[in-house]
Image (cartoon, rainbow over all chains, first blue to last red; front, top):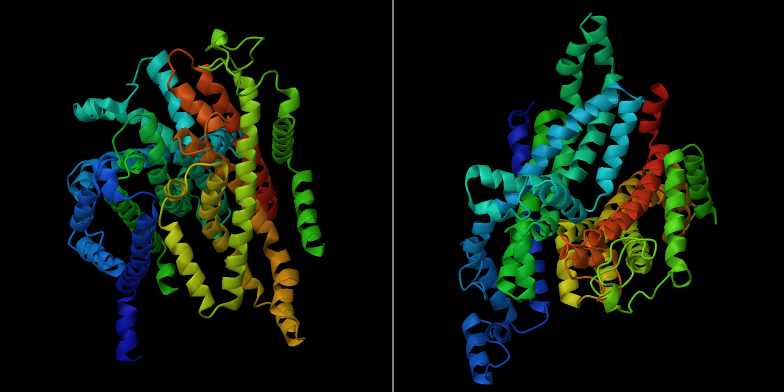
Amino acid sequence: MTALSEWAERYRAPLYIAKRILSGIPTLLAVLTVIFFAIRTLPGDPALAILGDTATDASIAALREKLGLNLPIWRQYLDFLGGLFQGDLGTSLVYGRSVASELLRVLPYTLSLTLASIVIGTVIGVPLGILSALHRNRFIDYATRVFSLIGFSFPVFYAGIMLILVFAVWLPWFPVMSSSVDGTIIEKLRGLVLPAVAGSLGLIAMITRASRSSLLDVMGDDYIRTARAKGLTERTVLYRHALRNALIPVVTVIGLYFALIIGNSVLIETVFTRPGLGSLIIGSLDNRDYPMVQGLLVTYAAIVIVINILTDLTYSMIDPRINRA
Amino acid sequence: MSILSSATVTMTRAFRRNIPSGLGIILFVTLCLLALLAPIIAPYDPIEQSILSRMKPPSGEHLFGTDTFGRDMFTRALYGARVSLTVGVVSVLLGMTIGSVLGVVAGYYGRWVDPLIMRAMDVLLSFPTLITGIIIVALLGPSLTNVIIAITFTLIPKFARIARAPTLAVKERAYVEACRAMGFSDIRIIVFHIIPNILTEVLVMASLWTANAIMIEAGFAFLGLGVRAPTPTWGGMIREGFEHIFQAPWMSIFPGLCILLAVLSLNLIGDGLRDALDPRLKQAKDMG
């Protein structure tokens, strides 16, 4: 074995990680380019949008000059990329503050909503999947499958509205609006429950299905037969041997659903009048606040690309064979 | 003919043994018929307002109650089905066709074509589906055509990925090589030998994505980005109803149930198809 291949063998895992992270860069650059040009084709003149219909031609021209809208498009593009690398996403036309600081203000709301949905999805989905697999083709299995099919078919905003109707209007257990996002920790958590449950329905369904079918798959494998043949109890076989492998697909499901839940937050935040990326993008589109829309798209794309890389890496850590591919 | 017949045979076989997907088909066909016959069976006019019967709860007279303008919600739900089903079916047909062609071309030609097409698809997949759709509708303006364009656009990369993977496998098979050796044109090989082999997989995804497309359209309408009022849409009806959730909950409940039923029927169909076509799942079933 040459020194080079020995080195490559030893550092296979870190090399894979580095390669996977670097592979995100060209996609990110292409995404940034698409965002830049898409924003510039949105209807309406940003200068006119800021100054309103009563603005004079001279003041519009002056503002266009100030915003750099008169520069050639390639100069604007380079300025945009240069600014991004310094963490500068421009200035909001509506708030007058930097886009980055506004994004950082609302990001925790969307991330906490997303993470809470994932936690609920996993905590309910995995046990349901196991239960369903263990009682295969019996009542519990059918009931779970019907439940997950319905959960999967519920539009997220409709789920939110029905949760409000039942648990905030008819049974006043939770606040109607997530206005308590600024209160104490307890109030914040109470305000998070209904939105997070609404966001988790589809995920519960997917995790239940994934863990059910992969547990059924794994239970037929040779090593499980061996474990049983050794005389281990069914409980040990299940918890020590089968579950560990059966849960790998759940990681993929969570990774795949992350982008969906982040996207769905637009609807959930609208229903529960919560602050966040979603309600910000709707408001910014209404106000033609294009620097803000641009910043939001960059944030969404960055989150999705990072999550895709993380999912791949987690997967390769659980199953080291992937590094060799 | 032969392309369709192989897919049809597989699908008929799939459905014959699967009660839930049969239910799904019955439900979906019923919804389509109701939408189609809306002008004949609807008891009222979907747009005409009647101030005297504002926000009436469900009754024999108004099955789903009335809205803030006194319009019959049942009539509006029937007409709303037209928008939802049209958007779902048309955008998936377009997205499936364009996406599959791109995926097959990428997989079949390889070399520089494959990375070029697939990187472009990666860029589209770097945004949450709903966000891409919202930006496109904002770019083009809210209308039925633009909602269809927006959803089609978000579906293209998904179908491209689904179509590419089996193409890569099929093009290496001996019979495709034999076709090439006999001097068949690429188009002929793709149409008669590649597409029949990937069609079933693409169709399963199509049924599941029609369900999603209906949910996305409803989401747009709920956000006020859908087809303009007074045209009834399920999402738009929920949007109006949500403002009066305390006084008139039926205004949001019934249109939501319509979406749920439509989505459920398509998911049942898609699940049945997938179960029948995935040999791994079938094996697991036989074992149990």
